[in-house]
Length: 464
Image (cartoon, rainbow, N blue to C red):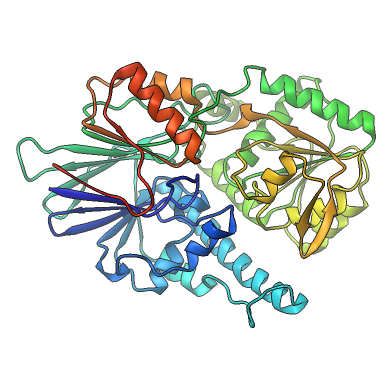
């Protein structure tokens, strides 16, 4: 028998952490940070429910912080096993974990300096040294490699099409003739996306752990190239600046690709494009290095000599001095900065300056979790709190779901349709409560499968 316990991503899209216990082994699939409402974020400070020193290995579906960001904290509490993931995920984690640790330290310093924290002193969740120790544990593999975990389990990574290096985690019991397979989807990507390959089709799945970020919604059918073109031209007409809070990994690179494409076709003028996120700059370098892991279009353009993530007037703002200099630009510019849900990073400084001016535009190109500043801005709250100040929301607010890296419910059902047999149990996670319930019901209605929607801390026993 095996036991699967859900220690995150239940009733929320963040904090992915799933503990699989089988035989004498304990595996943690994903090790993410909680984001969004304060009650969720406070869970990051709770001791992990199982002693980290007892965990044999951590397996990562992909490099987004809500899937990997707790790893330094886990190591500081005693985890010392292997971290398994793809090579691209490992490359990106080298950047993201160090940068996230730096931001933790910087935010604690800023809170102490300005005195707006209730904690005296404010402390980081983990440090740069914790991140370095975690990164020493990484042991990456290629898609399709057969990785044996002791004598009893086989692990494979399969391309999930969400971001560079993203994976389905396929674990199979090997010490019996009829060993069962459990598949952890991580985040399920979309078909025919910019830069990325389509999610692979998997077969012979006995137990499925499936995300539901867009479980109750469909992406807008409008062409996102057309939508982005409209927003750019309207921003130009208003005489303001277009500000894009963007995830440093995945969304930023897709946006740079689209801007370059539209410029080269003459559909939008070559604006001044500022990428103001050290993490995004380093992640873009990984994308440029790992072209072979991207879709055929990206590879063909690269063979033809194009630098696919480089619009004509691209400014890479590595330093704080370059970041501050953007303040002088009042029109004809696009500012791309992290974080994507406006939970931290340099985007806060840009929004504090740009949100009060109705000539400016703020464009969201990714999911905004409940309780985040990004969600409040998207819902057009009169003001949002940034660095202890109430900042008026007067800028034009736009949203394009077509850039999303998450499958909507029709795309998810279409992927499930390719299964050659019914999983014994499908677990629905990584979604707000209504979204998870909605996708669960759609799967029951369409396929008649047995579906469970776990709560935090729920455990399930099953044959593996």
